[in-house]
Image (cartoon, rainbow, N blue to C red; front, side, top):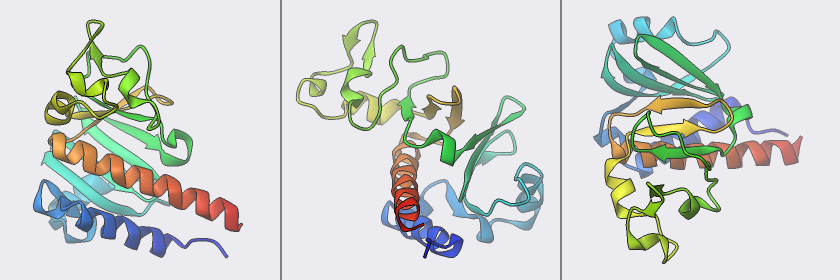
Length: 177
């Protein structure tokens, strides 16, 4: 028995609630204004189920579907298939900064340097640097070399947590099949 799409949808909503995303610039797709839904739907593949929308404006938004992450900025949409991307996402300060080494969740402290120097001393203690937490506004995908726009640093890390959970659900799905 595999994990159903409905179960995955419910888990994403649960995680978004747990991370207090709905108190920020995030809304469940079902609750989005009809005009915005119609606008965004043209970017969503027919077989994908939209779940969360991170909205800045018609010029900047990101939508999480069960199987794909879509980000729109610079008058272009960027699609990342979550089954391909897996866990290879990294918070970034800006799009001009392409990490030489992309970090996985296991070795993130190796990446978080600027001009060869750690952003702060928490790297030595094995913790996420405070500066990176407060100024990140992008997620970077190693596999697709794409950036995902987010309305703010809180949302970057909350979405990252949701993506980890989706990856873990996929592992459960694979094991059960």
